[in-house]
Amino acid sequence: MDRQFTLTRRLVAEALGTAGLLATVVGSGIMGDTLAGGNVAITLLANAIATGAILVVLILVFVSVSGAHLNPAVTLAFMLRREITVADAGLYVCSQVVGGIVGVLAAHAMFDLAILQTSATARTGMSQWFAEAVATFGLVATILGAVRFRPEAVAYAVGLYIAAGYWFTASTSFANPAVTVARALTDTFSGIQPDHAPGFIAAQIVGAVAATVLFGWLLAPARSPGPSADGG
Image (cartoon, rainbow, N blue to C red; front, side, top):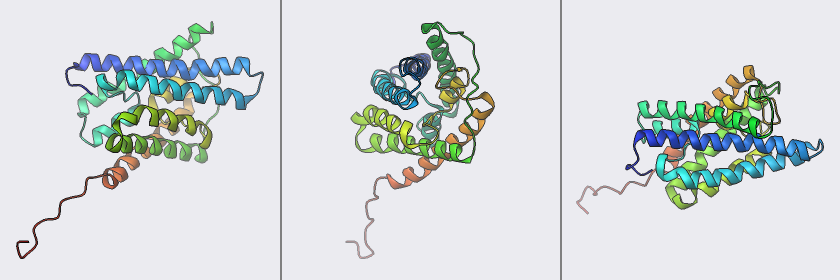
């Protein structure tokens, strides 16, 4: 993140990026569902590829402006690492949530659907919550590891991780509280029933905190050994 960008610009970048992410998640779900003829596996594949691809693009575009968090769980991780202030983190989260909702509404408009919707798709239960904790843990771990060792590859690592997460998690890897809130507002392939969203969000927070703590320790630079007792 380049400090030459004002907080206002950073907040707009977070909102625009999260809007683009949700427009892709929901829009590709609608398109896949329309074209796949009822084949859920093909719809999910299309959804996963589109989401992973757009994440690479969005991170490359916005990373130098705002850090391209596009996710309250990521913002929480960097706040815990004291790389963003509590006040700025709160504003980032608000921007992400608003942007995500706008992205969902844009997807509805593009496909000539009712703009305002709520989802009827049930996504709840211990296995789903555990899957979201695992998905978010892995996402934050991916980001922290790539930032530490291969910062130029963060966008690709995140895109690939989320594309994989669609398939290896029972929840299809939301791994993002702003995405969860926004997806409660679409009664399409990507939706989640509004009263099931809090369980997902709680699990995502747990996963993000766990990854931040563990990988903060795991990836910390080794300390130089101090002088020995004999001065050597």
